[in-house]
Length: 484
Image (tube, rainbow, N blue to C red):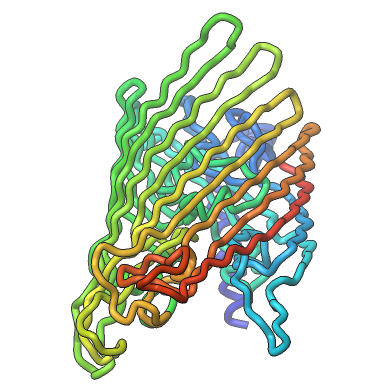
């Protein structure tokens, strides 16, 4: 009852605030008050949204006018996904996000139990977005966005409504201050593939939303970005499993910077051409545990670095044709909180078996990934091809008990490489969209690693029992979406 009273009180408070913002001082005429309500709650997307996609970012709209008034514009979409997989895979949210096929696991008769197809039909990838236009303050345009969806906070919370984005955007002429929860800057929301799947190319693309504070300074076509961030729904792996406490216990926020050049121009029969070139770097420090197995306080942590380079070229032609290519390359350590390959391991300390009683140090596992997305839009149609590759290059330091899974704080320690070939076709009629996306993803698993954690691809004199086994999953996704 107390919970219901609290919810009712919050709703009443929100209603009173909305009423005060819309109605004002009470001296307006009846028609003026009606017009104020119509302006405050508008069921429509911002005019600057030029195309429908399944990933919302803070760049989907921009406030450019000088009007000082409250407005809330509602949007989002209703979506139904049909999914078919030829193999069991590592997935998130009941298969909405598929990462890579699972390794072969055999029963007593030698049958691979993961070589089993599956399907799903679900509508919980439905979203509701409120974009907020606030009065000016501090000489800046003030806006915000709140978005939630119905996939829940975990697989056990399917159909639960949870937070995706909650941002405050303060925009001066050449400076932007953004605070709240949205895509981590490593996601590069100005350069990611518009896949039908909500994965946006993960695990080849860094995929995470995080609470953050970031500042962007713009000088003509040049943009410089600085940020700090924490972890919430996407967290690192540590001694106690997946949690944000390892970053919080370090007492140092994750931090990074990016520079990108964004230039547009027109030439001959091309209505508009644009090119985006960018680079970035990220740093985080984790404390995987604060107590050893011998009940001794420890301060040992692991430093993780990431670097990215990205490019997007596009051309819009007069006959409603648009084509472009996006490319991104990323080097990273410990990036499993981004649904990517990698993590870290226990650093070598002696020739004995791993013992959690030791106050050991850690070594980051290096991973390199790259993807390419080429697309063509012709009127209401879009066709595209996505290619992704990722590889585990091991650590720079020797790993303790390196063939022991317990030495690794990562889920894919036995994967040497992943690759994906994916095509998509979209047809949009007004606000309804039909999309088909077949994709083939391969994971190469190895049974032997060297002292640096590098998976061995074939037998050798030093590793005569090494075997590399590649498994693939063919997925078909068909999605019907009503955008509003």
